[in-house]
Image (cartoon, rainbow, N blue to C red; front, side, top):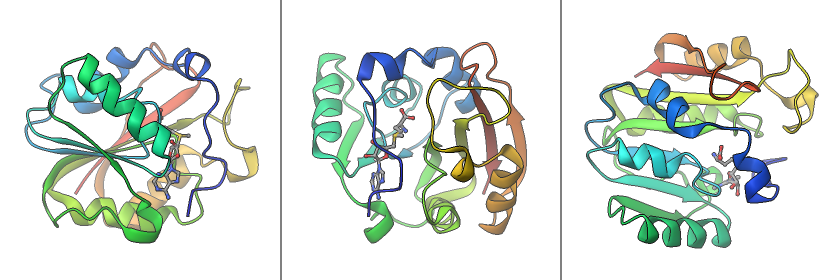
Length: 191
Ligand SMILES: C[S@@+](CC[C@H](N)C(=O)[O-])C[C@H]1O[C@@H](n2cnc3c(N)ncnc32)[C@H](O)[C@@H]1O
């Protein structure tokens, strides 16, 4: 089942909200990811491409929309990034299909307003290795934003922290994205 209010606007408009290189470096760490990375709901691949450049292993990028998956496949080919595996998959209905403890990092970006956030975070927790990191970004609700889900379903950082804790994550820390994505906040948490 596609998450509520998770459709995408025009790609150029979407990308205008993010200085992705700086944001991804902050979220993945300056050394990048040593191992495999999973992205829930890759959309246009806005964050997938810069993440793949900083990941030594395979980047599995899941989306329910065939045109998003196909578009990312084309971009990965154009950028000659051979470590991206775009996959058409409904992770709400079917999970990720990845082995337990197989991933070094998981990205959940602009998605936690879906219906069952803790179920998704539990699946992320399952596939992450011990010590693996989950990164989250989402639209802020403390300032006006030019886009983003309805305010009544838009989670605050405090709400995300509570869900992350419920799903079993620890060491939850804020990531300052002000310089790169002024309409967003960031969090990282450890399995
Ligand atoms: C708001 S977009 C965010 C895209 C990307 N994470 C970003 O921040 O640029 C959410 C994406 O999740 C996908 N999505 C929503 N529900 C899904 C599901 N159940 N399984 C797989 N993908 C899903 C949508 O098709 C969409 O591309």
